[in-house]
Length: 176
Length: 278
Image 1 (spheres, each protein chain N blue to C red):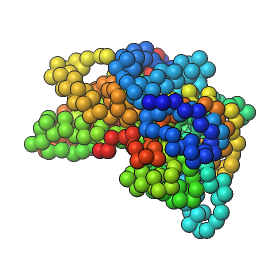
Image 2 (image 1 turned 45 degrees about the vertical axis):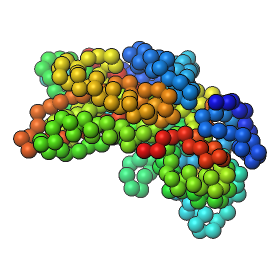
Image 3 (image 1 turned 30 degrees about the horizontal axis):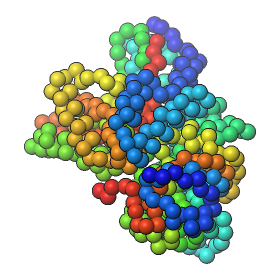
């Protein structure tokens, strides 16, 4: 188990260094998206609309605890990744480079991650207060009408993660 | 009659909601510490994050988990207690005021299909029972859905017996895998009817960690189930390297001659519940 300090968006060489179980402290830009936002992204891509912000992006499956107006985000842990499985291969094909969440994925997702040379990083479920401390700023990037499910662009520093899948075929979750 | 004003209820419930969202209680903290010591590798990293998270949530007064849940109330009202409004109305107001004031995530959609958010985390789920006297007890639970989604109900046959019940509990945890934010607490309801078994399973999650089932037979079954679950090697966060569950709590109840309902309600490690009473 090694420790890496990585920057998002990623360069491919840095991703090849990673092995499952490694600790990653991630800095840079991360987009939040959960169930409702995934449905909309998928519908727009199917309709042939352009979503350039997804190319090379890191998506964090998260709907933060917003705090009151003007306050920083209070709590921002991962939601269950498996619910995003139906949309993940499409988004990876579109150019998403890394996804962050918690829990095992489908076989199709693991395959799509390998084919697109993308990684799945695991955040500690239920550690929302800890993960929120790494958020430097946030702004609504898309779908403000979704409220707590809107897409936010977060700028993070040293967000604590664990490598869930690597580019050498490794998957950290035991297959059931 | 003893009059308890709506404001009094709202004030006490609101304070408790903030407390349970931001503080890990002593019984849970102790159980998590023991599990942290028993973990290694990636599982240990997860446990370290969980312990650090508890400190940060408490010191900054922020929710330990961004899923500030659906709020569930188990109220027991004395026959001599008088309220100015129906209790569900009062409790919804307490939830709405607290979640908006504190900036907690509104996580409730009004219609399960069109999924428009109610904006203030209401309605809450309210279960009411009555007792003699002039006291009122309200147990409050804040339940995240990562673990709620991994819960199951099965209407078994009497011939299935306890062995199949035990298999169902372990299988439910195995299917949940790393999804419900392990280390988990497993609530089990055995008996009752189609709707009562899950309620018993949920109530079982309210029992303090480290407490022993008052029925010796069920206490031994709980211990055996915990052992079986911790052999699944799911581990903290589902990454292996340590135990999967902190406890198994079972509540059994009378049932029909033709039935054996079994429900399993999973709680994540952020088991948030408390009690207010008058």
